[in-house]
Amino acid sequence: MSRKLGKQTTPSPPSDDAAELAPITAMMSSRLMVLANLLKRGAILRYKRLTGLSSVEFGLVASLGRRPPMSVIRLAEAVGMDKGQISRALAELVARKLVAREVNPRDNRETLVCLTKAGLAAHDAIVAGAQERNQRLLEQLSKDELAVLLDQIDRLTDTAAQMLADEKHLS
Image (cartoon, rainbow, N blue to C red; front, side, top):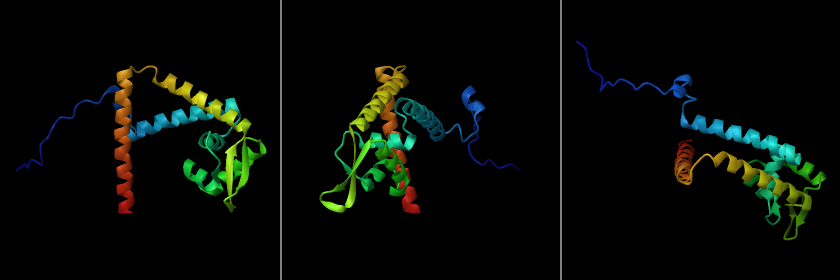
């Protein structure tokens, strides 16, 4: 006697692209990571060519931007790294006169960092390069397609943030 374990359906044939991929690489998160990694690698090469900055250095310059001086701790939080990780990159940026350090006049235990005139020029080159790359990436989409894509990214980001919060709660 055979037992039916549930509604059985015939799976639809996979698309040609999906048929070539291993199950994990066909997932949305994997595809988005591939896209993000390709964009990051291209950005690293471009900013190295345009400004001579490493990926950590251009991240620091981009984060400092045209803001008032900020503490090293706040900068570390902004770039998602610990203070120790960015200290060597900051030292290099100070040596190259792209970043200035000063003691916080309100708390002499704290160091503030900001971009110098040369650092602002590097920042502006990074922003211009990012805008050009963004335009090239999105020029293939219509205005309506772009609006839908950005809405979907926002929705996926909200869901991913909730998933992260759920995981933190379970840990």
